[in-house]
Length: 248
View: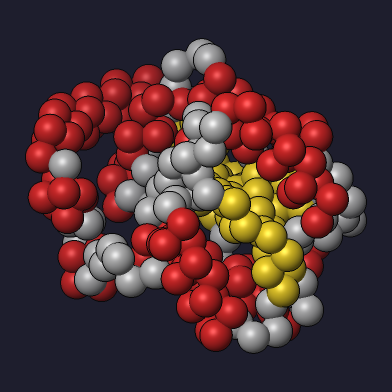
């Protein structure tokens, strides 16, 4: 069965970006139950620029089953290059849709990341929101290095349909490809503040901000030093112009 039957893929500045209609999320989740491992990458503009360079992050994005844009700039970049426009997702909303799809099929999830208090609250809220979804395990993100092998083995034995990885895990999203070969099968997804949002410790960007591509302003309020990323946006615009001139 073709796991990507409902997905079309474009290329922006050498980085793969997938087009997945929201109506196809449940169908795709079912098709990913094919006995293989599948990583889903939620791609920001910052991530796209990082993925252009050769290295571990590039390999991770290139090898992911699904690469979904979360930045408006990526959608506008595709339009500027006269390519099919991908559908942009708010990370938390996409994950909620994915969990709902798995719940309808009686599937399971393993939670890895964040702090004890946040993870417990997030687990409680996930269970109350998706009562038909089995939480087959959980572990904190900031764990001693010597315990990683035991954590990986615990995930492997629990065989979750979905492994959600959040803050505090060493390597962040790269933790997944570094350990993917040790797992049996399933879907694997990293999101930085996922558990904090589920635990109601962080507020997701309001729809009005997100729809205008201004959700980054909240991140800068929390971490002012990231204002330098505006330079990345300008460099992205220059690269798009060059790519259009060259008809890339």
